[in-house]
Image (cartoon, rainbow, N blue to C red; front, side, top):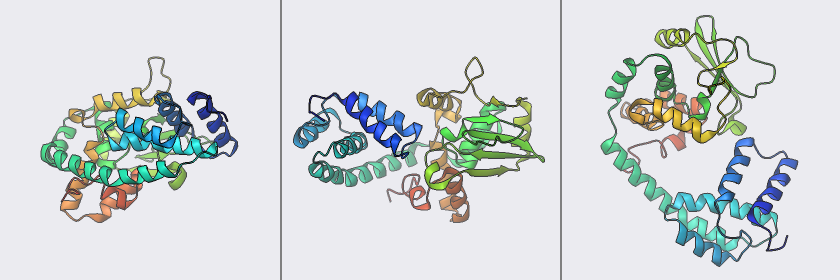
Length: 281
């Protein structure tokens, strides 16, 4: 494809190729489009120019790596060199690790204690209790919590579902970050308080626990994340998971940490680095 092709054309062509191979999810496609729209230089320009531009535009190594990943994929699809870009991406790994450790250290010094969060949770009611319980106690990601209340699971499982059955809550989560790796997640909740709070919501079949004004599903990721942040204790969002992991590590409760990992669809090694507030030690 000629150099004059726009990034939009290049990414559209790349996505079509991936769709034909059935190797890309809707979420990944949206990510490709969003990232591609923010690249201000042509993806097929020289590797030196790309590296120079990325350094000029961004200081966060995670952000640079995000753009690099897509640029490398699109260039490979167009039979363009990527060796210098890959070498540059490799240099970012240590920076990302050091930055993560620094962020963890700062959070460890500033975040509320496990006990204070637990107390705050007990004082909540309704949807705020439901959301914070699912993040703090179960360890779910934001996307997992976009739940549809159903009496029965449909034959085609393409969403995340919540049921009240045999006096327990059953979560069936099919649409989440690592679903291709871990498959459908089934989570049972027997907590009496949680069950009662869900009952008090008085949801009807096929109603989402949080929805748009017309009762339809919130598909926009940014909108969904903003809603959950506002509903979370002290607007901590997923930091609640880090607080819980720290408590479990303090107790050497690796069995429960493994359970959180299964609930999230996250490996133990990731929890012990990306979600461990003591990882800077």
